[in-house]
Image (tube, rainbow, N blue to C red; front, side, top):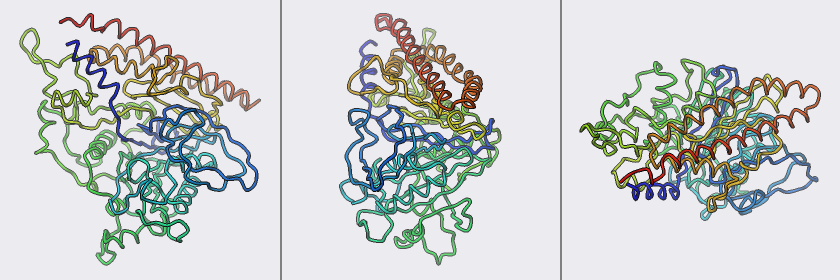
Amino acid sequence: MKKLVLLTILACLTLPKSHACTDIVAGKKATVDGSVITSHTYGGNDTRIRVVHGRKFPTGSKTPVYYGLQEINGGLEEYGEILGYIPQVRQTYTYFHSAYSHMNEFQLAIAESTLSQKKELQVDRESGKQIMTVEQAQIFALQRCKTAREAIKLITSLMEEYGFLPSCGPESEALCIADPNEVWVLEIVAVGKDWEPNSGKSGAIWAAQRVPDDHIAIVPNWSIIKEIDLSKPEWFMASKNYKQVAIDHAWYNPKSGKPFIWQEAYSPTLREWSSGRFWLFYSKYAPNFKEWPNRKLSDPFKGQDAYHQYVEDISMYPFSVKPEKKVSVQDIMEFQRSTFEGTIYDKTSDPDWYVPSKDGKLIKSPLTTPFPTKAMRELLDITNRRNVSKGNYGMICQLRSWLPDPIGGIYWVFQDNQYTSPYVPIYCGTQEIHESYKIYDPNQYDPRSARWAIDFVDNLLYLRWQDAVEDLFTMREPLQADFFNQIEENDKQAQKLYDKSPKKAKEFLTKKCHENMQKVLDVYNEIRNTLITKYTNNKQGS
C-alpha cells in the first residue's frame, strides 16, 4: 500500500496537463444580482497574477508582439519571443496579467477557450507568417479598450492585419468578451499556411455573436455560433470572408438552399470531451428545454459501455439558453468544479475502484479519486473521461454596472485545481497583487507561493483521497464563505472612500485583496499539516 501511494503522488506531481478550457457566460438578466459574468478554467502555465499599470507613450512608439505568453519565461516582465512590432497607443490601461490576461480597470473581461478547426486551415509557429496569438490580442484589447464591442473590433482588426497564429496546438479559438452591460462570444479561425502579410487577404476568419441578457452559454472547447445574420449588427459581427472560405473549400454550397452554419463549416467531427460538457451544462441549467440524453449512472459498468452510448449531433445544443433559475457566482464555481459525479463520465464509479470490505461487501477504495493520474488509469484500466474541473488556474469575472469600475469588477481567481482551491476575490481597483500569487516556478517548490501551497494539499489528498478531501472541504468552505460574506461590507466602505478619494478606495481594496490572499496561504498550510499528520504512510498499515 505504501509503495502504491508513493507512486501515485509522484505521478501526480509530474502529470502533464493538456489545454482544456471551459468558459461559462451569463447576461445581466440571467444572474441573481444583475451582474454580467464571464469565466475561464484551465489557463496556461504562467499562473502568476500581477498588475500591469497603464502608461503613456511617445507618438510613433512601437510595442512588441510576443509568442510564449502562456509560459513561465523567467521574471514577471519576461513575456517570451518577440515575433514583430505594431504601433503603440498614446495611453494604455491597467490590467491583470497572466498566461491569458482576463480583466482591466474598466471591467472589461475576456475568457478564452481553444476550439478545433479543420486541418486545411491549421498553421503553427514554424509553418506560417502569422504573428498574432489570441493571448497577445487579449492583452492589447485590455490595454486599449473599455467595452466588449471595442475589444472585438480591435482584436479582429489585429488578426486580419497581422494574421492569427494558433498557440494552443494548431487550433481555432473562442473569446468570451464581457463588460458590465453585455457579453459576446468571438470565434477566430486560421487561414492556413499560405497567407502572406500585406497581401490584401485577411489573416483570419471570425464571427461574433452577442449572448441575450437573460441567457447563459458555455464554450467547452467547441464552436457554438451557428447561423449568422449580419443585418442585425446588435447581435452579430463577422469578417468579410466568413462564408467565402467555406465555399472555396467546398464545405458549404450556396446553391444547396440550406442555411450557412458557421459551426458546421469550420469544425471537424464533434469530440466527447466537448459533448459531455455541453450535455452537463444544458441538462443542469435548462433541464426542460428539450429531452436531453440520459447519462445518469445506474450501475458502475454503464460508463464503460461506450458501444450503447448515445452520440448526439452538435446541433442539439443551442448557442445559449435562458436558465430555469437565475445563476450566481457560486453556481458557476460549482459547475467549474464538476467531476461528472453520478453520471456515466464519473471516473470514481469505475468498477476497478471497488474492494471487498471486512463483511464481504464491495466498497470504494479510500484511494478512489475523480482525478486518477495517467499511471493510475493504466494500472486500474480506467477510461480517461474529461472532467470540467481540470486545474492549473482560472477565474470568474463578476461585472457590476451599478458601482464604479474599481469596485464593480470582481476577479475571482483559483490556483492549481478549482476542485481543491478556493476562489479569491480581486477587486478591479486592486493596485498590486500579494506576493504569494505572483510567485510560482513549477521546477522549484517555494513555501511563499499560494500555487505551491494549494498544489501541496492537492497531492497529499492522494494518500487517502476519500477521507482527506472531506477534511479539505471542512477547512476550505469557511474560508470561501468568508470571502463572499465580506463583499457587501467591502463594497460599502469602498464606495464611501471612492466618493471622497478614488485613490483611497483603491488602496482599501488592495489591502483587502492582500489580506485574503494571505489567508489562503495560511489556511492551506494548515490543511497541509492536518493531512500529512492524519494520513502519513506511517499510519496506513501494511
